[in-house]
Image (cartoon, rainbow, N blue to C red; front, side, top):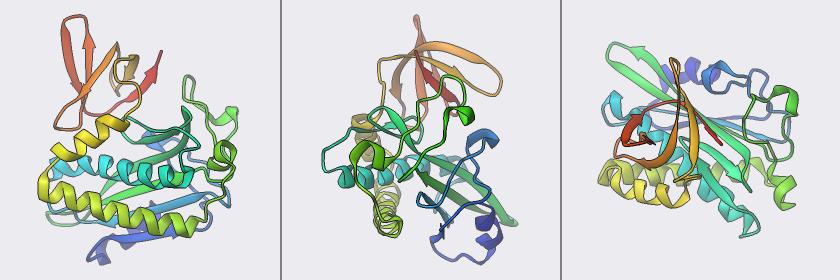
Length: 231
């Protein structure tokens, strides 16, 4: 992600940065992302052709793109799902994470940086995990398949271009339908932690803004960004 910030001002179209080894990986809310040799780390930098308020929808084009890649590589041997907003689970264990950041590169010009991290061969130990987080795993552990990181990059870039095109041409409706079929835990009891509060309720839906709908009793609340934990 740091390299993406350095290069953002020179980007004209979507630009992919691939790391053979990542020395300063970053996760959501400033957490450390552990990424040893053999795993996958890549960042896409581009200027979405939509309002800044709609940049967050690329969280879902990214998640769907990576979901499709990993599903293809499993060949049906493992269960892939998306944990809102954009973690990827493999057999209900975390195998990948996605991080979005905006980069101001000039007056009224803001780039979007999307970092992808996938545990292809190895995964972090319990000592680096947040309490109540999904157990980590690697693609190799769950499937016995070793993915070539560059092959994954090529497939991911193609899928991402496709889904971004769909979002641009048709809006979020079609993507939301795909997302609802792939999302983990609809109807489950969850704990939602925002920067300011902790909420409890049922994960009831995802709205047309991509927000999680939390139902608590007769009240429904749209959550734009948060950490989600399943009871």
